[in-house]
Amino acid sequence: MRSVCSPRALIGALLLIAPVVPATAFAQAKKPAAASAPDSTALSRLKAERDEDPNPAPARKEGEGPFQRLIIRGVHLIDGYGSAPRGPVDVIVEGNRIAQIVSVGYPNVKIDESKRPKGATKEIDANGMYLMPGLVDLHVHQGTQQKAPDSEYYNKLWLANGITTVRGVPFASFDYSIKEQARSAKNEIAAPRYSVYQRPGSGWGRGVPRTPAVAREWVRWAKANGADGLKVGAERADIMAALLDEAKKLGLGTTAHLQQGGVGQMNADMATKLGLETVTHFYGIFESMYESNQIQPWPIESNLQDEQTRFAQVARQWSLVKPGSEKWKRFLQNLKDRDVTLDPTMTTYLTGRDVMKRMNAPWHAKYTLPTQMAFYVPSRTNHGAYFYNWTTEDEVAWRNFYHVWMQFLNDYKNMGGRVTASSDAGFIYNTPGFSTIEELELLQEAGFTPGEAIRAGTLHAAETLFKPMGKPIEFGVVEPGMLADLVIVDANPFANLKVLYGTGWFRLNDNTGKVEQYGGVKYTIKDGIVYDAKQLLADIEKMGDAQRRAGK
Image 1: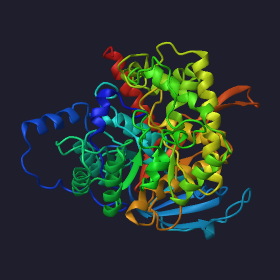
Image 2: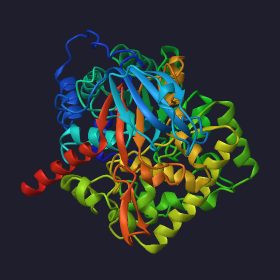
Image 3: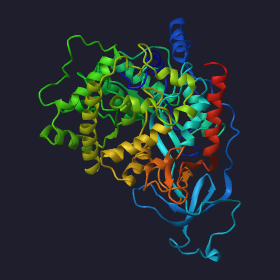
Image 4: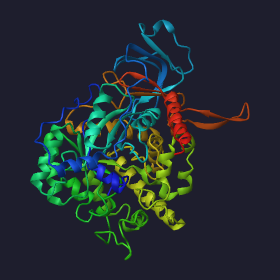
C-alpha cells in the first residue's frame, strides 16, 4: 500500500520510473526500446496508466542563465556535509558547475575588494545571506487531473522551496515521466531534475509480473526504456528476490513501500537482506522488531480498504516494539551492515497527530490550489482523506508512534546510518515543497542537529541516488566540480529551519513593535539557472486565483 496514492493513483503508480536527467549528473533519457505491437488489452492497460497524468509543463520562461561566470558575492556557505556555516565567501559558477569558492574575509570585518575574484559576467549580491546545496526529495508524485491538473504547479512549488532534484516514485505514467525528465534535463521547463522510479509492470502494457522470470524481464525492459530504479511493494519472496537482483545487475536503484497488506510476507529486515536499498515510510520497520507478534494484531472488524481504520490502527504499533531491546539493536545493525537508506517521510503522516494544525497551515490560503484542497477533505474515495471521524485517541496513538519512530531514526543516524528527508506530498493536507522543509524540522525534533537535518536533504539523498550507478555524487554538496544546484536564503537555517520555507517566517521587531516576515528562499539555482523563488510563488498564487475565478 502506498502512503500517498488513491486506488486510482495506485493504478497510475504502476507506471513510472526513469533516471534523474540533470545536465550531466545522470544519463540522458533514452528513447523507448522498440517492441512488438501491443494487443488491445495492453493498450487498455496503458491508457488506464495515463488517464490521470497531469498536463505537461509549459516551455520555460522563468530563470536566467546559465552564465559564463556567475559570482555570488559575500555569502555564508552551508556545504551540505553538516558543518556550521562559514563566510563570507564568493562562489564562482561557470556554466552549470561550481568552479571555485573563495574566502574573502571574516565576520564583521570589511571585505578588501582588491582581493576578490574578478571577471563576472553576472553577479548576485548575497552579502549576509546563506547559500546551501539544493534540496533533494526522494519521494514525490506529480499532481493528477483531479488534484492539480498542470504539472507546472508542483514543479514551481518544489523550486520555490529550494528543491532542485526530485525522485518520482512514480511521478505519473511511465511515458509522462520519461518525457518530462528529458525536458527538465534540457532545461526546457522550469522544474527540478527528475529521477524516475517505477512500480513493477508499469509502462509495458503486460501487467504486473507474477513470476520471477517475468519480473526480471520487466526490469530489463524498464532499464532499456530509461528507468532509474524500482519502487516495489511487499512482494512475494521469489518475486522480490528477482526484482532486486536484476535491478542491482543493471545499476538501477530500489526503494520499497512495504504495504500493510503484504508486510507479513516481506518486512524490512527480509527485504533488505534480499538487497533492497531504501525503505520509505515506516512500513515493514516496526514489524521487523515486534516483541510478541510477527503480524500486527488487528481489531476483528478491520477492513484495509477503510482508510481511517488502516491509518488509525497502524499507529498502534508503537506499543508492539521495545526501544533499545535486543531486537531493536540487531535490526539497526542489520540495516547499517547492508548500507540501507531510511527515507521516512514523517511529514506524510503528520496530520494524524494534529489534524487541526495541518488543515490550517499558513500556506494553504495562497499556495494550495482549490482542487488540491478539495482532495484533502474527508472522503471515502480520495486517498489520505480518511478523517471521517478522527478522535483524540487516534491522535494520541500517532503522537506515541512518532516518539518511537523518531528514536529509531535518531539511533540509526547516530550509528552512521543514512537517513533522508522526503515528503510524499499531495495527500493528507501535505502540500508539495513546503512539506519537504517540514520534514527537516521533524528530523530536528527526532534529535538531528540542523546540520544533520540539512545533510539528510542534500548529501545523503544525493548518495542514495548515485550509489546504485556506482558513480560519485554530482550534487548534494557545495564544492568545486559539483553541479550548480544551490539555494540562497537571506537568514540562517542553522538558527531556524523555518526560514527555508518559501514563504519564510515571522518575528517581532522590537524596534518598531511590529511583526515582520523574514527569510524564505530568495534564489533557487538549478543547473546554473537562477530562479527568483518569490516570483515562482507569485506564479503559484495566480494559478490558485484562476481556479477560484473559475469556481473550482
